[in-house]
Image 1 (cartoon, one colour):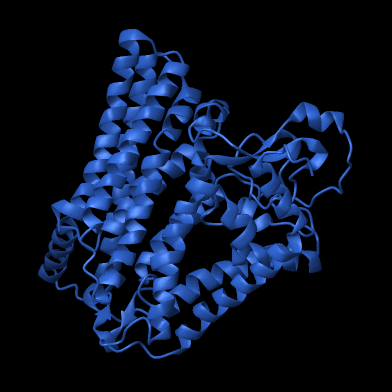
Image 2: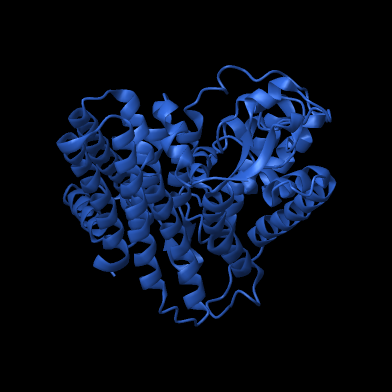
Length: 457
């Protein structure tokens, strides 16, 4: 290897050369995942005095919801979809069984671009109804069910591919958005690819089904390193974290990215994380309960739903009534509709003030990606903080850290929006006028998270 080759490129080439080591790591992660997901679901609920270091159920809860998911999201912003390509047990199992499966072509209905958004919404809402962050059975149902579905799809479609990861994974859309902010990517020189100069390497198996020659960003790339050095045209490189939003984002024509970001990652997620602490939720529930009692309708107040439909663990005094489930749905979808619509209208207003059309709206919406990612991390890491405080840690730095993250994300989103408006034709007074609705949009999201962590605490 040429000693002048940049360090990052050598690292990418090293991942290709050591593919067998990566596969070994993948199987270790799969084993760890299966043990922590399956075993706790068959154990008794931990006693109130139990601690995570002496109780497998609590330890698994902390690993999955205190470490795994919040920091997987964070990794997308730093390393792109490295998690998907190197560590994700679901992707590893789906690809493995795909080598042994039927190898059918991917049907058109699976390739519908709206599935990641729909799957994210359904999984998020269902997880709240059965308290997925708190109970091992619920975690096994959702995470295990997703893994089984990934393996079934892998067995039916593709040959050594990750059809599930590309088209159906509930977090694929979220990962696609967040990875666009990563300062690392596999850069493709299309001209060198066409020249096909030696040395000629074996054609890599791109599991997520990407046209490597035309790859322009991180949104679909799993950062597995298998194509590194191919035709001398692909190498791991550094870039500005803003590059993909500003340049590649200008080519966006799909409304699903903006829909997932505004209505899902921001609106729906805020409702899902907020309802447990929101006084508005309590007010709505009490009003509906009084309305039912006045009319002698009592069955919605009963807590007799099975645990796989609504949270039902009477042994620890935690059981949802049918009314609870209804109000949770109303609150979460209400937040999604109200917040998402407000953001949509504000950004539409900004593009109208610019005198531009729908393609600019899609581009401008991507500027809120840092704020969407920060909100998801804040919501998921609230479980991290809660579990650590149960262990006796004070964590006095948590609130200042949350404030710094939120303000940093707002500033980053505003910077991206300003650049998008400038690039897409906003000048002088028109640029300032178009920027005002974006400021309002960021302020709205910031206020929502302020209520959860400061206003209602």
